[in-house]
Structures are given as structure tokens and as C-alpha cells.
Amino acid sequence: MAVTLASRRTTRRLAADAGLLVVAAAFVLPLAWVILSSLDPRADLRVKPPDGLTLDNFDAILTPEITFTPLLNSLILCGGATLLTVVCAILAAYPLSRFRSRFNRPFLLTILFATSLPITAIMVPVYALFVRVDLIDTMQGTIFFFAASQLPFAIWLTKNFMDGVPKELEEAAWTDGASSLQSLIRIVLPLMGPGVAVVTVFSFVMMWGNFFVPFMLLLTPDQLPASVSINDFFGNRGMVAYGQLAAFSIVYSTPVVLLYILIARRLGGGFALGGAVKG
Image (cartoon, rainbow, N blue to C red; front, side):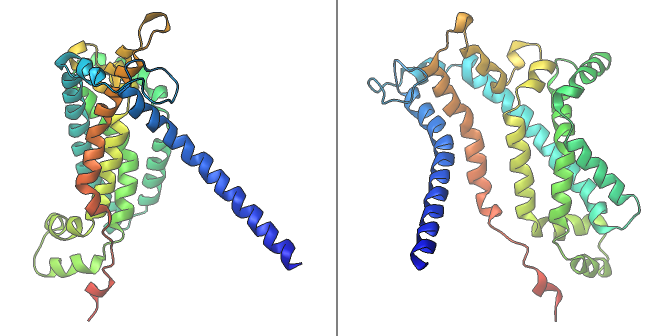
């Protein structure tokens, strides 16, 4: 009997390990293809050792027209929209977290519903509206729409993080004469730094990889971000510059990796503030 139980446990463990290996391969193989193909002068769709190491693929893409201008456009669009999203999410989440109202739950449910709307379902009316208000083919119009599309989930996340900051700390500040805005800036935001970092990274990453929105709202080639200009590597009649595409993908992903590294230390913080309101 004991042998049978041990055999079953071993079988289950092996099955779990095999499943984890399959999942790991699904993530590792595309990454391996990008790295190997960027150094391969004759890259194709296969994951294989390079036919000789070369940096020609990087030399070919590191030009203002192909890489630098689209990356700058992406930083302007995503950086501006992320800043606008985080600020608006904080200002919207604060009353939802700190004040009780019969409208809180319906508002939060409406926000949750808004996060499930597919972006393609609203692009036609948005495009018509932008044409009417003269925001089509403008960076500021695209920034506004980026922020509006990410704001519902950002508010939901920010409100949940803000709930973890004890209200008693703010009440002590109010007793000393601080306003609600002062307590938000000087007490709540410093204590929910990890939450702000999470919302910032999530919003930036979702915008950085968005192809459809700037493709629809921006018409001038000089304003297109890198998420749209990457389509130029797919030529006519199925011809694709795989090596240059892989090299561009590495450069394109660098800002997101750097952003995560810069604020990763904030993600490790916690909200263990219970002792601050005792004694």
C-alpha cells in the first residue's frame, strides 16, 4: 500500500514538473529566438545557433528613422499618458477609499465593467469624435485616449492599495490642521509607494505594447510610435527581415526593462503599518 502511494506521488510530481517545463519552454523559446536571431546574419523562424555572430542587424536599425524617432514618440505617448493616468487614478481612488457613500459600489462596478470593454469596440466612435474635435493625428489626443482607456483598472488597483493605509494616520494629521490634499500627499502616497509603482508599471507596459490605438489615431509617419513602426519589418509577399526584427525587439523592450529595474525596490515594500496606530 505504501509503495502504491509513493508511486502515485512520484507520478504526480513528474506530471507537475513536465507541465512546468512546457510552460517555461513557452516563455523561454521566443526569448531565445529573439536573442539568437538578432546576432544571426541569416536568421529565420527557427530557434538555432547563429550562422556566425554579427552586429549588422543592430547597425541596420539604429537610425533616427527606424528606431530613435519611433522610440521617442513612444516615450512621449506612454510617459505622458502614464503620468496622467496615475494622477487621475489617485485623485479618483482617494474619495472612494476614505469616504463612505451609497454611490461607491455602483461606481466601482461601473469601473469594473469598463475594464472588460474591448478597445476595438469603441474605436469607431472615438475616431469619429476625434475628427470632430480636431484631435485626430495629434499626440495630445492619443495621450488622452491612452489615459482614458487605462484609467478604470488603474482606479480599481489604486483604491485597493489605498485601503491598506490606516485612516487613523490621516485623522491625526487632520487634528493638526492638515487638509485632505495635504494628508494625501504627505501621508497616504509615501506609505502606498509600492502600490503607485505597480499602477505605474502596469499602465506603462499596457500602453507601450499597444499597436491598435496609435495606428488608428495617428496618421503622420513621423508621429508613429515604435509599436506601430515595427510593422515596417514585415515586407511585401511575406518577406520579413527576421534579424533586424529581432534586434529591434530587443531595443524596443529596453525601456520597459529599465523602468521595472528603477522601481523594483519599491515593489518589495509592504503595508505593515498596524503598529503605527497603536500605543
